[in-house]
Every structure is written in C-alpha cells, then in structure tokens.
Amino acid sequence: MSDAAEFQDIERWFCEQGEAAALSQLVRLTLRRMREEAAAFLDAGIAWLEGEQARDQKRGAEADRLRQILDQATPPEGMQAAPVAPARGIMQRVDDPAGPYWRGADQLSVMCRQARARHKGDAAFVAPFTPGQIAMGRHYQALVERHDSAGMKCASLEGRGGGGSGGGGGFIEAVLRDRDEIRALYERIGSGIALQVRRATDAGRRPITVRRLVDAVCLEEQDITAVLRAHGWGKDSALRQTLRKVLADALDRMQGYPPKNSC
Image 1: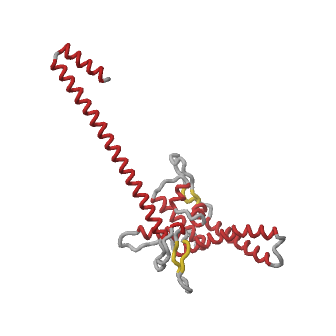
Image 2: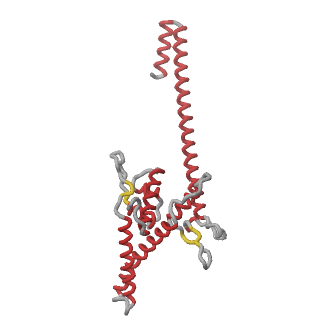
Image 3: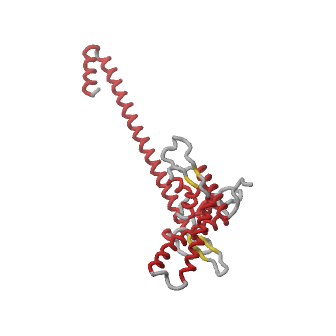
C-alpha cells in the first residue's frame, strides 16, 4: 500500500473512530516502517560484510599464489647467488662430481618439493615419489622429446636425398630404438583407468586413463590438480591422493617392477 493510501486510512479512522484510533494506527504504521528500514539496513550490512569476506579470501588466495611463485623461483639452497626470477621456472640443485649445478625441475620433483613445504608435525617426511620414479619420469620425457624431434631430422635427411654416405643409418637405428622403447613403456603403463566416472550425477566429468595421467604429468608438466580440472573434476584431496598413488605405481611398472599385488 502506498503512503498516500495509508494516510487516507488514518484520516478515515480519525473521522470514524476518533483521535485515539487514528494515533494507534499511525503508531503501527511507524513501527512497521521502522522494522522494514532496519531489515533493509541489516541486509545491506550483511551483504557488505559477505563481500568483504569474499574480497579478503580472494586477496589471501592471490597472496598465497604470489608466495608460491616466489618460492618456486628462489634458487635451491647452496645457489643463493642466482637471482630470483619467476619467468625462469622452478629450478633444482643437481650435485655432480664436476660441481653442483641447477636445472629446470620436472613436475614430479616440484610435487615432492611442495609436499615437503606442506609437511607439519614430528613424523618423518615421506615424499610422494621416490628418486627412481622421478628418474623414470625424466627419462620418459627426454625419450619422447628426442623421438619427436627426430621426426623433423628424418624429414630433413629425406629432403637432402639421404643425408650423405653412412651418416643416416646410425641415426635411423637410434630413432627405431627410441620408438621400440617408447612402445615398451606404453605396454608397461597399460590401458587402465586411473579415475572412473561412476554416477550419473558426475555430469561433465570424464574418466582419466593411466596413460593420460602419466603423459600430462611427465610430458606436459601438469600437476595433479590441473589434470583433475582438465577432466571436469573439482579439487579434492582424496582424488589427488588416488591419482598420486596410480601415477607412482605406473612409474614403478615403467622401471620394470612387477605390478602391485601380482604373484
């Protein structure tokens, strides 16, 4: 009801029932307006507070992201003379008999480093991946990259009519050896499913094969969360733990270890 209509009612009450009735109606109208204004004020205040909380969370997440970038860009211990350079990517120290040096860190090493940074408590830290698994991941990456780049060189040799006398044969043999090793690793990885879609409510989610998981982490430098996101899965610590276990088992098989729970 509009203000004009309500005041007309008060005037009618004054004429029909007297001053006391009109004053009573005016008090009720005033109290109702006060309650409405107070409720609107409270709603606005709550909305503002919720907005501030959301902005604080966003600022906190951004601060965490920047801290992570700086932490990843900081040179390893013992090589602190090198500048902090986020664009350079994550680096790791390598101890060599000729002297220590540092190189770009693979995704498996990055995940181990992040797990160590998150570790709390008195229990001994257990890395999510063993040195052998990390070495296998690096070997697989180098092998695939070398084989892929060899295709361009083969095309170049063909364009030059064979590449001269004797030089092309050894190269082709090396390419074929790499190809056979990659196929053998594919066999060891297998065609299994790392994460299956089980319910109709999992709309938008896609299954993740073991081969896809290995390639995403070892070849494309994606972390587990990125793999989940790319297949429509949300952030879930239990799912990340499951995929880490599947990935570790696959890397063991790639090294030649028998599958878990096999005779």
